[in-house]
Image (cartoon, rainbow, N blue to C red; front, side):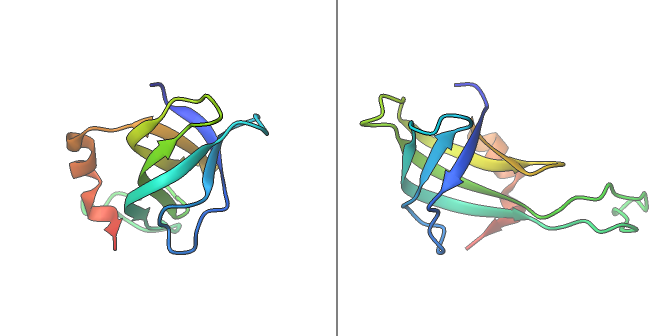
Length: 113
């Protein structure tokens, strides 16, 4: 699976299962979110903020990600287990990509309940 740009629709307020994810530019096909494992939020970085080393940080809006299972039936899309639906800076487009345990360990500090 390659990283793919998508659009989120009908996303539940509790960020659990439900709603759907559509390939960008395809108004018909969609994956249904069948399970949500985790929610991640990287906080906004405002102008003038500095990192632990004292260097200025590049401005970033809050970015969110969800570890989910996606069901592509009956749209004839492949099913995916444990993929990350996430935003990418600077514009906040939504993408899906496969992740492994090492990657998830690296973003664990952003996990929210």
